[in-house]
Amino acid sequence: MSPIRKYTAKGDDCDATVDFRVVFQQRHNELDISRLASHLLPKKGRFGLVDYEKIFCSDHKTGPDIFDVRGIDRNSGALIIVRPDQYVAAIMPLTDWTGVCKFFDGFMIEQS
Image (tube, rainbow, N blue to C red):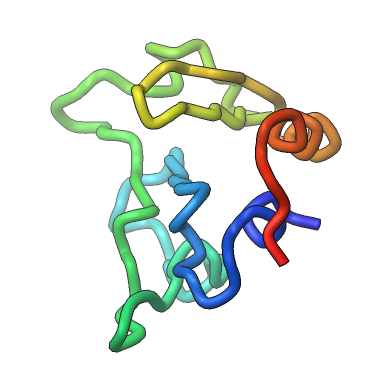
């Protein structure tokens, strides 16, 4: 089960406990948001408005490329878990779902 579902209280927004973001390699005008998974465009709050602030694209014009700066392999990507105090708690491959679940199981309390 997803840590988001497992540790978020029923009725809370999907990111009330675990907040997530994604950084794509494409330029923003090359990204087709209609093809993204629904959890990247969640409907939240009282009015069910779409949260577009979970999706970011690497800055190809003015800034340093986040993939180059952080040494992230463009083919395999990375999952970075950052605590609320901005401490990087874990960096894992996107394919290590078991490791991600074990990480959160180590300190979170399952919601019913």
